[in-house]
Image (cartoon, rainbow, N blue to C red; front, side):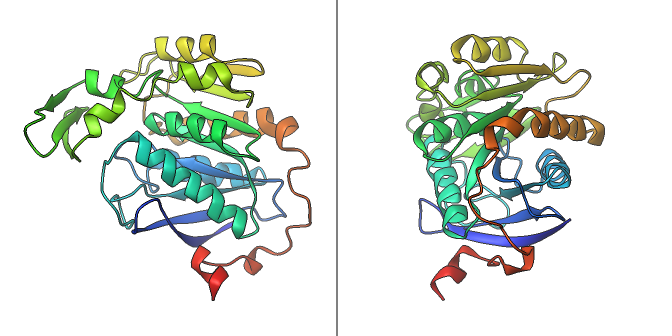
Length: 270
């Protein structure tokens, strides 16, 4: 198993930066991982799950959302911007010869994953991990916002985070039920009953709103950020087994050697 850097243009002018975790054998599918709010593509959950999935033969792009880590653009612009950027990530992977068939979203990233899966061709399955049933749950757990000021502050887990103008208002635009009620993309819902940030009731709402095929698996003993490696490894093993029938045959050609893939989406135009 190895990884390569991968950069692509997001919905804004800034360049988004990530890494692709490559299987040691020809991949059976390609995926994109959308990280949790304020986490980044180098978060423990993003790294551990992506690498574990690579061990199971699934190549995964994990990247920093706009303004986070090494990525350019406006930080915390809103879920709408995250959805656009995730769609751009899928398009860049497809153009680079790594057709994406699976989207995985952690926490707020799960909302972006579901909405992107509904609107994107070629996505055969989507996975949510500790995802709220509506993005405005983030505002409810601690937000100070004054519309006469430039932006606002969201407090999560005791950490205060300054967000861009319109971020808090944008959260209300992303309940999952409407997308789930029309989607025919198979969905796997992973959630811990001990999650103190996004309660287990959110998983119940997502499951109720989703159409079949749908599955729910409990991440017993895990916390919201999946800070224990064994929890991330278990999640990856479940995802790998569950997704198998949906991504079978998603690669039309032998993917060849991993060192043949471009190190950047920009290399396609060189």
